[in-house]
Image 1 (tube, rainbow, N blue to C red):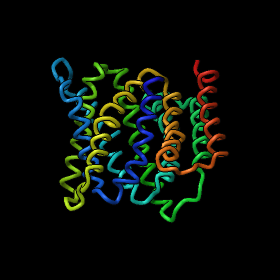
Image 2: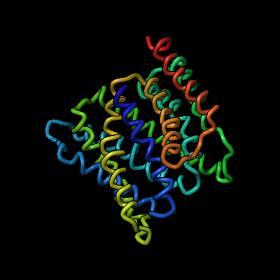
Image 3: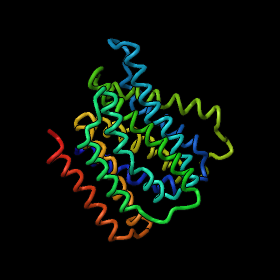
Length: 282
């Protein structure tokens, strides 16, 4: 749980940094490429193949390609159509995806208690971020939901691989990031725009931080933490980035939230975690 909380704090900065300094200014595919190449470089020293079946290594690369490579390509594109607050709003269904996909991958029926506690977290996040949306609502919603599904499948897939085909997690993540980086390289050659590269040291610095810290260390801590908790808790924690992201907007960009909805929604998210841990987990 501690790792999930620390990662949530790290990621709270990413939404605003991308939305304010990168979206529309730097080619989104290039941003994804640099971010994932840096993350892969962090774990490259731990790359090991000896003693593992090729199919296992390919599966770890596949979940990395899906959770980060494809998810980033879609979500960075979504920033062109949505404000930061709208993007945060549209991520609130991710906990439901996580709990439902985890049950499907385990070949079991959906556990209603898990789905109900995740839905309560969704309600809390929606209360916080309910606001008037832009004219790009439907297309932005579609993009973010596709990104959320990729993120959920990749996250749950990694959790299942650690349960069924375990390996040291620093080694697992070297293959995880390699798969994600390969997707970004292919995307750059297909769709990259070399005329929209970073032009300021601030933009390069943000990409460096996103690659090494938010992605390289952040996703490692998040997925490591995901293997230590049940799927319901993981889904609920995924929505904690909403109040965290709003607090970052307040502290740095002085964007005031609607305090009544913020406090009520935050209380509902905390209540969903308490209900899940107190009444649902058996």
